[in-house]
Image 1 (cartoon, rainbow, N blue to C red):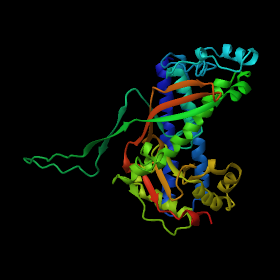
Image 2: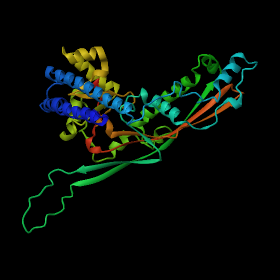
Image 3: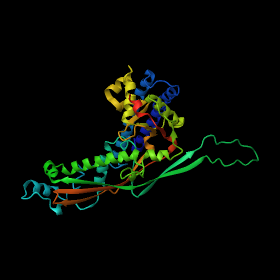
Image 4: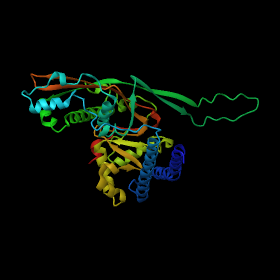
Length: 403
């Protein structure tokens, strides 16, 4: 069988499996939610287990396609260097290691420090993997690598009930059902300045991991800041929040976003989730990647509700914690940077984190303070494609939800 035929066969299997197995489960769960069933109802939890199993099978099918395309040369294999950060700080780390460990002085030769400038594509890619890797939101939403400072996120919308009856000898008016909208990613530069002490280098350089360790620590610290800005940045307040505009401020300004009524005084997280779920139009609730984003305080209240029930879901929450939380099949992402008074529902592919490919670093040895000054800069932005698929619950009584 030809490679393309084999790939198409697996794609056909995926479509059939989705239509015959996944979609009916989602429809059944949506129907149960509409009838105000409890998320801990045994029927709901059984369907959610089947949905999780089905999603895992789909992931395995997708991996089969990827491997077949790699083996057939249709897409490049993602081979990475065993040490993508070699040269991140030093031109010749072996020479620096020898001097620090066996030399006559505790000093860093300026000629040994890497010149400032743009990271190589491989190093930048590895660095950005660390940036998003452990972040609850950035790790699941769409990442857009940008070659220019701006990128368009185009969307085509089709209106409902626009068809008209045809009558002989009468012109049919324009339907005007198709609309074209766009949001634009426009990157903003962020700078991270870190001091690397000589003692740290001496303690780590013998194990051949100094550069990788420094890169991973710095990248993860930057990731924390970027994930925080993703929800809380407002482009206006103070030194930090003004750097960029995050999703909450973007959603609040968009009339297409589906806001719930105020949830002030509501102490049951399930009630909030029901309002959030129902705020999203029915045709969007079962979109692929549909996800609910909540704060740790909110998830604690919901976990307490579910773990107290003698059900399969209750058992899974007790053993797996937040990683198993779902609301009628929709997974919950628990984000420590999200405000307790907010919860959101959106497909992960609808939220976009854009990063310019050019990540730069500058280094300077400061002999008086016995340290290397490392400055990393990158350009980034947050945006979404369509507000109509987003649900937004605001003014939640966060304290009451966990009492």
